Length: 421
Picture 1 (cartoon, one colour):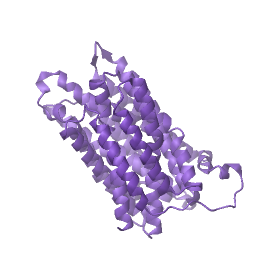
Picture 2 (cartoon, helix red, strand yellow):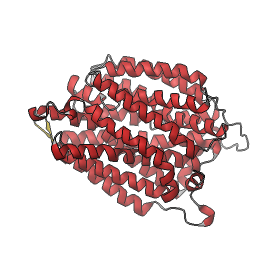
Picture 3 (cartoon, helix red, strand yellow):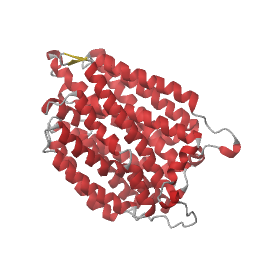
Picture 4 (cartoon, one colour):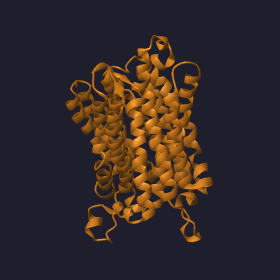
């Protein structure tokens, strides 16, 4: 197999695992296991809590001591075991700890898959800014495939989604054996303890521009986690109204949500153009604006008529909201940092997004949902509008805080790389 084909298969399986349960686990826990909004938020926050340390730590190990592709396979094997255990759990506390361990070993594999891709593409003499979106899009395709499989199979409210994810994790652990080798750094010139421990990426916080970037990456990560935890339960709640019982949104909510992933496919491929034309600041602002619009549209959406049109539009803008922040941010970090610390830098980015951001987003949003629930009925419109106000304020603050490089000697390195596209 060519390097690009192997990377596409890796990315496909990586996001198939996540797509099998990430969107629907909240509905399974609320509707089947009877968990509260706060409990669901806390369990989703487990990934954020684990991600405070693990992506950076695993990135450091990949940079210094173990080949990224080997470490990648070990993590997925352990992740498969934890998913099999989670399928048997019905207590919220036990579910939290099992999913916490799953996050410990799974979340770092996202940044590892990016690192493996960047290194492998460069070794093949390919331009990463041009080629990586074409590889990463297979992750979106697989996420859609997984969501459709779970929905059409009738597994949205079943633990079968966890068994399917576990099977895919075992397959990916085996496939990692044929991934290209990613050598560790042999540089011995810097003898500081910071370098020896692999903590070089944290030096990025000394640069004001990068510190601001990572701060807002964390805050946007909160918006992503809000969406992941509660978009599917929101659609399931329309089943409480008999007028909506035969609608697509009620019968196959994951299929409706998967339209957002179809939108991702389009906008992933548009990333090189937007980075070249507008730069990272504008791309990130477009992401924040899209999050605000998505939440507003969800707030006014319902399964019929104009309301359904709002739901459809919310799925379209999701592609901009996710891709222009998550994928563009990862590419920006890779181009900004020294080659020797790219693994730990990707881990740091993942820590801010899926660590601090995800934890805060999941826990706080769970409490917002419970606060706006009266007699068991959730006021979803108010809930979504609160989240929309959050991302609107976030965009305004980012616009005035993040400075683009202006001088000829300090041109944004992302734009430099994108010139070759």
